[in-house]
Amino acid sequence: MYSEKVMDHFQNPRNVGEIENASGVGTVGNAKCGDIMRIYLDIDENHIIKDVKFKTFGCGAAVATSSMATELVKGKTIEEAMKITNRAVMEALDGLPPVKVHCSLLAEEAIHAALWDYAEKHGIVIEGLEKPKSDIHEDEEEKEEY
Ligand code: FES
Image (cartoon, rainbow, N blue to C red):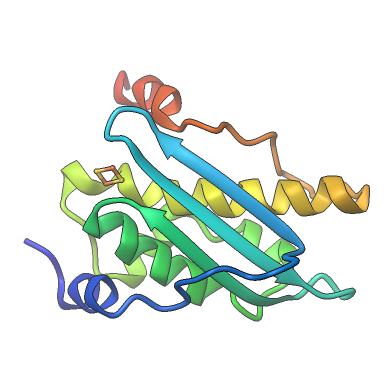
């Protein structure tokens, strides 16, 4: 059911933990399954993501996608990180079963929420970044209708 990469990132998740005095912190949840994700970003003056950590109270797919998402944004600029979608994360993991696709949204949204927090603290605007939702479940319902 799960690819080897998903199993690897679930069993040995990368970048678990927290960053003290992080540049940006984002937390999102999904009220439907009750899972919660928090992402910490350390961003330098050149807008490069020097470090990233995550903590989750979530399912295995949420752990694996967050682990892969943190690997993908590490060392990237904010602009590059904005382009990393949950789809890209899933591809990097060789796919997820359809019922688990929503789990990958937690990581993407938590990264966006952390970037939003960073932008607010620094009085900057990040192109394409919208105010994050604290619960991604509503969004999912809309998408499911199509
Ligand atoms: Fe909730 Fe996977 S079941 S994030």
